[in-house]
Amino acid sequence: MAEREEVTVRRSELSLPTAEGATRTIVYVTYFSRDMPPGLVTIPKDEWTEAHEAELIKADLEARRKAKPATVKL
Image (cartoon, rainbow, N blue to C red; front, side, top):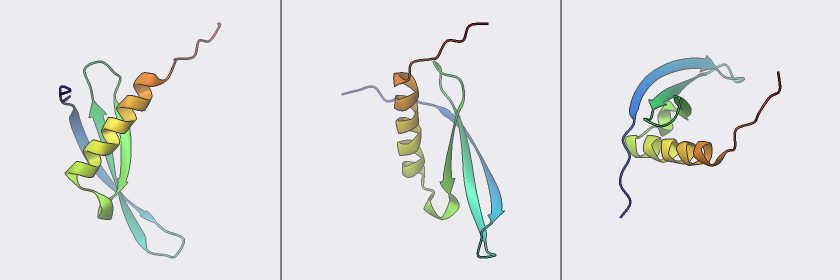
């Protein structure tokens, strides 16, 4: 069984107007891992659950770890 990773999360909410004139609230989740710079995932508030948040963070971490960093000549 794979070891479960723990990350620290900080959540904040932002209410944004929609094209229909209503307001939609988004949960911004900044997470901190031991081996990566901070990451950010966003979830509509009405879809937020702790399990959904964990799935999104796990997928984001996997994608970021697979990505090859670009190099820039200065």
